[in-house]
Image (cartoon, rainbow, N blue to C red; front, side, top):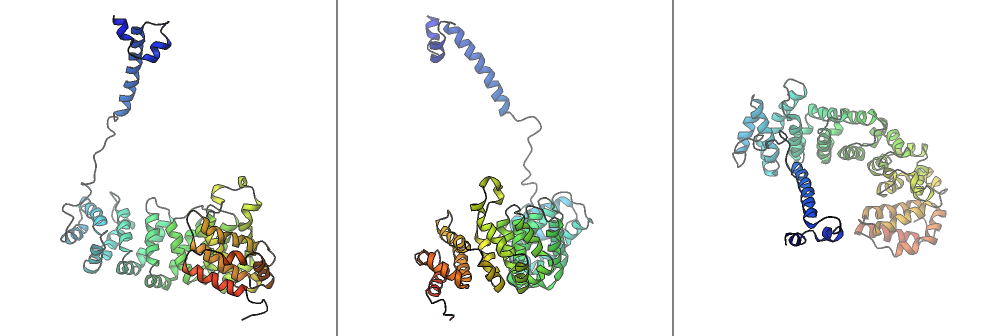
Length: 418
């Protein structure tokens, strides 16, 4: 009777080994193995003794740090000589100032930039010992304030702050260099503040020291690249004098990691001045860019590292567009008959890509217009690409205007120079 009841458990095992063990023996063995497995599982679920820690979320924040009266309270505690009180005020300010209204009030009424600068410089000059992570929190507050026009202007007018931001990036201080780069990007993203930066040549020199410190460094913070591009847009000659052309040319020539992204964009911005055109012709820049365009066809995929494969052709086409402003570059482009084909394929692929890129399409249309200045290249474009350009679906109004202008120009007689 009992053996018959035992057969109702573990049907698969009972059927497989019924001639070897009795049903009761099979069930006992299964219970034993199950107990061993559950013991291991219970051990994994239990937290080792001493590893659990209490959350410090409330301990790191000032009491009642909300409401209209919170700002005077936090500013007062910011001046406290008690490290814990000061720390709580700083952490609470990072959250309180996230509201743009609170940030504007703190800048105009409480002069928060100056008070925070005093505390920040005491830590940086080692006058006060950093007991928590005060410097990182100061940078977070400056990051919030730099998004405000008044706050950005107050920060940019303090040279000591600008110098410290560049020092943090140069020393690659963990968890701080990214924040400092974002602050600089926010500052120079505003035309009025960008003018303040350009008045002091030491800012550009400090940025050049960062990039020349290790020319083979594979990656820089993305915000630092944007900060550099903001400066290059208004002062490419100054950047070339500081050696940025040679630096960026070597990064592209040696195919450093993600060379096709921000490094190529900065290189393209350098070509917007006469000095940049002279340097571009001296290093045979048209051949350099042609090799990049021809890379997927001429080289085996296995010969390229993952970060050497061009994922976005926008800035490469922009570099070609900016580099064709000189007659020497145009004459050199005649020797690369496949160059219009590469640009034309990218023009069509901009629409078929996973994420449509209207700027790539616009740059390709403008590049074809520049390449067509040479009569032989224009005849080639008319014979092979005019029909495709006429049927091109444009991604935005600016690209549509560029397409119509290009089609009208291509349909004119080559001898017509009007």
